[in-house]
Length: 266
Image (cartoon, rainbow, N blue to C red):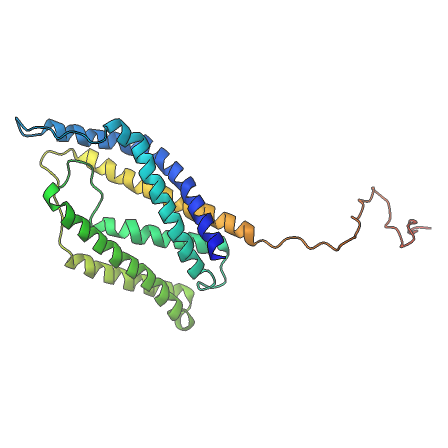
């Protein structure tokens, strides 16, 4: 069962990666190009440009697709394992509803909540010397977010018998927001936007990043849920050797066991 879900999740991740690549190519790449142009225009005079190991053309095409494909397969596989644990533990929910909730939790924990503290930045934003520190801070925020999301689901389920489903969900949500707010207040800030960087490029890049991740998680949740619900649908039961019931013509009465029409008006 788990193996089937894992394979299904990885295949769904491939489809999600293809759709995500289209969104990234159409919307995100233009902002990356503008950020790189800003970086090139503001290089120090006389600075020697580092040789490119991979050309910009390769980065924006096959490189982008390969990275998204690997990420999509990883997300799909992880999603399927979490779904296997969650099914039946969130109440009497259909496969689509469970998959949707798991996808929403993954999107919130792995992208949305961490980006409230450390939003995505295009090239030329951020000091290369602090890249390792900023990466560690982002992963710390992501782990905290995932823990808060999982804790919120657990709290809502345990509070439901006492307060009801809606009130329990609201209480868990308020508690999660308080915890995430305190945690993000304690984490250090990382504001390294260079002076003069176009605000509209930064804003559009972050909006496009949100659209890219939303496309990935929405595709995984919706497609996985639809396929799983279809696979779980019971097959129609047929009696061996039973002949199909013929359709009756208009005004014709059902036949008796001997095959002759049953009189209705005579």
